[in-house]
Length: 437
Image (tube, rainbow, N blue to C red; front, side):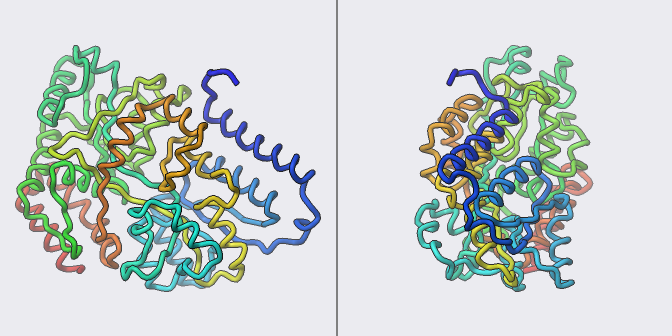
């Protein structure tokens, strides 16, 4: 095979077809044992790459003789809609679920523990301990999900834009980066050089704030999951956010983006110098020549600025409905999506090669195709270093956390725009926490 890069669409088709060809060679087509009528089960995910998901669900249905009905819901209303459907008696067998909704769904009886299912001990032993802990219930007794992806915040930069302004590399810290942004704006190279992920959703403003606090050595929640916002480092992050916005370095558009996906697609335009978002969005920006002006290694990453350079990390997931009437089929699907049922990391490889999505199984990263693909679009050493600096919180397992996560966003947005002061924002965050915890 030549060293020529295969486009995302072509590569996905190649992998999918290769899998089907191998399957056909091994079995001579579908065997008679799969001729039975499968019990239909449902999979609902948020709307991200539905074409790719449908392709590997088709593969799963064909190979394993199942009948999975896949559908999507918009990201902003995903979790509330599924909760309403569950309350009305609708059973969705397998669902996507973010880390900050899992515990509530488990406590409400929407999803079940996986501990008693066949083969689960082997899956647990193959996963990174931090991610396994993330997928475990608050009391530590039950693993309640399998990983969809692992993510951590990174800092991306527009290499040609910096060079145009006379900078060989990004600034070594926030002060230098802000100075670079001011020059870019003053020189008319970029109207809004800084693109932080201040969108109002669960992967936007609050995770961005957690990352910037971690990068300054501040943990926003202590080991008992108590908010500790009254710290100098926390106030310092807030003051920097105010400064960036007051200097006109951040577009007001950022506050109304529908998702982190929409935010990162703004970077496609090539109009911004720096962008912070979670790592799984980097590959698209750096390689999608059809959409991104930064394809061709023009989008690069730098160690996250701050005293420690640590950032927020999390693992989102697939979960199983506690009331599924097709436990065997639902468990099979869950293993296919979130583990290694197919024996070749089929789903994880699809995500990694097509979109640069990370996951918490170390053995997966030994795959030559994954290694070769990663080297095409990023410096693996910097990515690996940043992954090692990912910090988790356990506060998301508290039943109050999703409401806090939603209601803290307008507090942060008012602070950024100086509708409230930093001390007032810290007090409002603390009052919100105390009203919920």
